[in-house]
Length: 66
Image 1 (cartoon, one colour):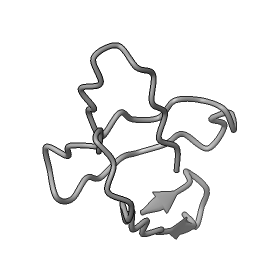
Image 2 (cartoon, helix red, strand yellow):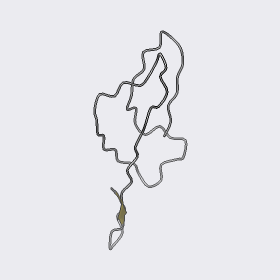
Image 3 (cartoon, one colour):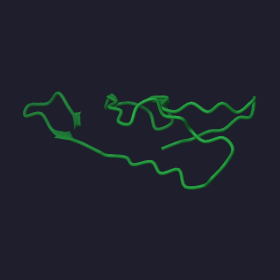
């Protein structure tokens, strides 16, 4: 849920579903099936918010973004 500190307070929620569809040798491993994250209103567009998957790639760089 997103909410501000105004009076009255406004709020909203967003649900993101991530589907990994291709069979690749290095797929993300999730430690939790559901994650809740808070983001400040003035957070920049390119700001890293949360790392939610780990990929062991033997040194190969893989980047997943939502």
